[in-house]
Amino acid sequence: MIEVSGLSKKYGHFEALKSISFRVEKGTVFGFIGRNGAGKTTTMNILTGLLKFDKGKVLIKGKELSKSRRSLSKIIGYLPESPSFYDYMNSYEYLNFIGGIIGYNKNLKKTTGELLEKVKLTKHGKRRIGVYSRGMKQRLALAVAFMNSPEILFLDEPASALDPGGRKEMLELIEDLKDEKITIFLSTHILNDAEKVCDRICIIDEGRILLTEQLSRLYKTHIQPILDIEFEDNPEDFITPIKKLDWVENIKIERHTASIYVKDIDTARREILKEISKLDTGIISYRIRKSTLEDIFMRMVGKNELI
Image (cartoon, rainbow, N blue to C red; front, side, top):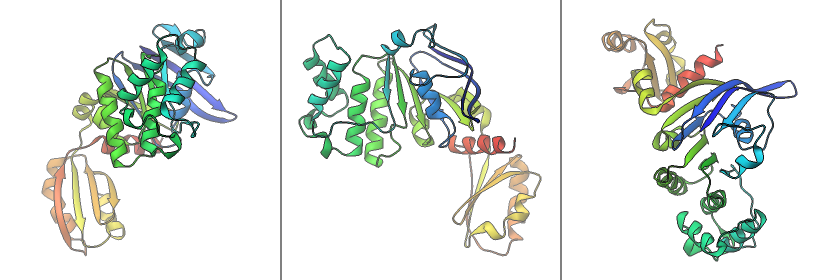
């Protein structure tokens, strides 16, 4: 559906994309994840035809994007990270307005009603957009993205600024779209969201692709045992001897808990209690767990920083 090869983009002397390549299969939810500034929005703006690139090739449905921007725009829907509206309009008025701009030729009134039902805004459709919550505005923007019945839907951080309720609603909408076999390109830095809805994961950092893999296979190939140890005091000041052990790959500290990423779980089981007993502090709890997508992401990004 989407094939990207050797894609590069510079802003002056800054290289935002460094010859990236990946493939998005038809009907899948493709999670494009990375930290802020990693190159996600630049990539998305290129793929949606809003930004030109310097080198490489982009094929969408077998057509070169650089030669077929206008025709390909008809099969693409785009939800930007911060959509803008005319706040004095209501949803019905706004969708009719957008439909007129893009030259929508079908029954616009019927389509507007169907779109608002799809994004669960029907009962709020006649309220002014200016009084909508952030989540309601994101759902309205999703309805706009659906106006041309797209085959490919680009979502740029669709839930990043939403409260827990709004995030849940947005993720449920994305889940519902899977049944319609729409190809979804989801850009996000919220790893828990990607873990819930994506079929395939692509990690980008500092303009480089670090990994592209099916989510199910990713867990099998990158699972790493982790020891979570909660101390009575913040472990920052006394954890250094543990970091130097051969079987320890990395340690992540959050408040009083140290998450120890290990290379050899058998050695870790034998040695960890002996090692932490040498530390001059009390231990509240200790457990072994498997990697999550966030753990895998942090490992990949950490390795990239050392390059």
